[in-house]
Image (cartoon, rainbow, N blue to C red):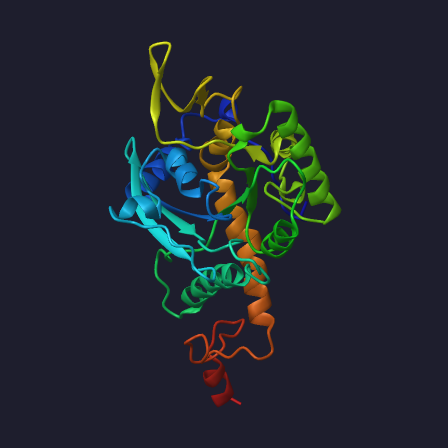
Length: 335
């Protein structure tokens, strides 16, 4: 406590009448529904792992780059080229501008040395863009946010362990973006094989010092730690994606039809797609954005502003602002 200051908690029962503090939540809800919000997701993995299909399944919309043009033809590029597609999704009056960044060409070549560099560069470019907007003397009331809030990293269902390319990618990207690893096309593994594979991956992640979302050091309280511990024990999620519906016991379900039955995508007994969707959208979407802004972007911002060679002309500004709010040139003129 600060000397000379008195404070305490005044509960509703101690108030003389209704104040209306709870109405703040309604105000926040109305503003959010009116303005909408942004969520930027990156999908990384080699071709054929079902990245576009899984994103379509997550948001129950045709939002992948394949769906945007009728005559889209898959051509594996010789180098990693990033493609971003934005859509506005509206549900019950809430608007979300969803941007999906795809990374065709990643891991598809014979020599995949440094194939993660264009992805690292892209993530840092978005931080730089936000930093420039933030440092303008006259800032926009709402700075456009193109920073990557989450990276879904697709692991092939080999049943063995992490490949060198997986280790190198997650080591580098895990420092600048929240990574959620998933086992793609998990229906190719038996339940026992899947569990063994997941345990091997968790051991490899720990052995290589790779942090994936949600990191234990970011937990804010005991309740959050309990929830996130359960998620950490389930990672990486073994998922199956599809945008086709089938009839099961008179109900329409998203699933993949095989000779021996239907794999229901949203049935947790069949795969962990529902757990991934809950993490990304229903329980941790806002936390992913806060971790990006308050931790990952903050590290980038501090590093950039501490660089000795950074100049304000490089950032499009005329002079460094001083701590007291006066301009450097103006301060010099009084000396």
